[in-house]
Image (cartoon, rainbow, N blue to C red):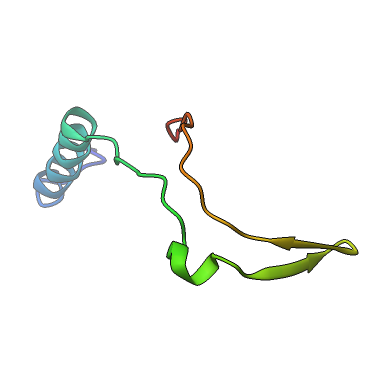
Length: 69
């Protein structure tokens, strides 16, 4: 007795082939580190956290952005 019938063999072959093609041709997603809010909406805002107040200001700086995994 054959566990795989002739009717299901093409479907099974398609699923296996699709999985193999995804493994071979998949490119990792490229992500870019950006602010969630525009700078002009954050600039000059004051917040209170842990009994201290902080005010945001933007300045140009060099920084290392690590790639996401």
